[in-house]
Amino acid sequence: MRVARLASTEPTYCRWKNHYQGMDLPGVKRMKVLSQENAVLKRLLAEAELEKAALRELAEGNF
Image (cartoon, rainbow, N blue to C red; front, side):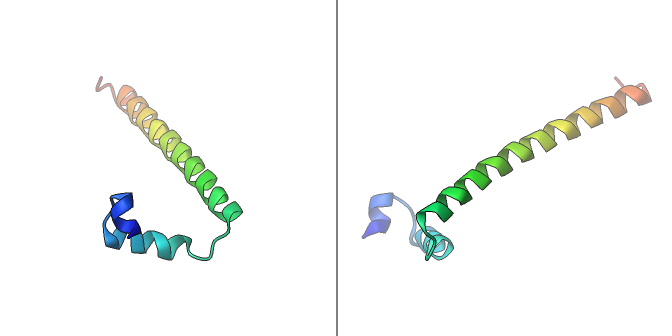
């Protein structure tokens, strides 16, 4: 009964199992690294968009 020990719902466990099933350890590690890189890139994009919006407002004189 892994679902109970992980304190997750059965659909979550099944989704995880389907996602990672058949993947070897290096593949899982690589996916983790890519997920972390993706999070960093999303944060950088959000910061760039905020800066762009601030510059646009400054250029329009609405500050």
